[in-house]
Length: 219
Ligand code: ASP
Ligand code: MG
Image (cartoon, rainbow, N blue to C red; front, side, top):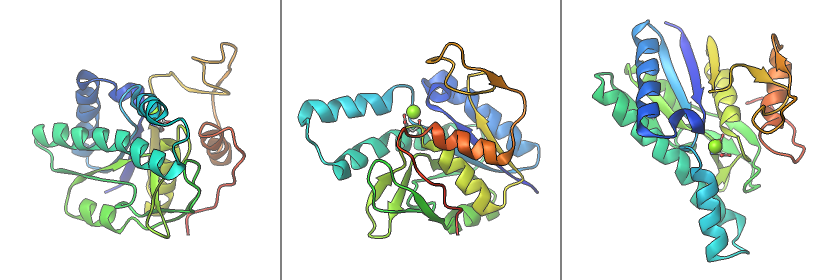
């Protein structure tokens, strides 16, 4: 059986109808005979709403507490998606970034992935479960919850796919291809017909943060 990693962004799980459609697609992938790992982002505008709450409580909130807050968005998605899939008759389990072994440095809100140790993901797959992972987050070596920078769920998916030796990593989106920039923001962005793995990694990295960051291969 092949391992397939599918990542669904916030607009793909923005409401319960869309979440159920994602669940159906995941279940179909499973029933086609694959081991399926799903990485999800926060529903719709959740991350921005959480950041707005933080700003209203304290304009100078520290980045640790911001990470504690905004990592919740992906946890909502992962749990609901797991419930939806289970309700469709396929066993599923959700894991936070920390539980999935996404180990990062200590740099809150722009953490770099240092290692991926997906033991629990592998064990769940071996038990025949569809495994749902909260994107965008990890745990630092001093066991603090970290986030990877805006749009970071793509990084979670690619890093997990590499660590699991996945046959396939799908970045599922409601945009009809990979563009040089976000076509909803940059009107003259160009759609790319093909791109190499290195280019894909560069794209994923650029999509996550305006700060320049390097991409360490998971150890
Ligand atoms: N929810 C996070 C964000 O909005 C991560 C992601 O969407 O990939 O930036
Ligand atoms: Mg998002």
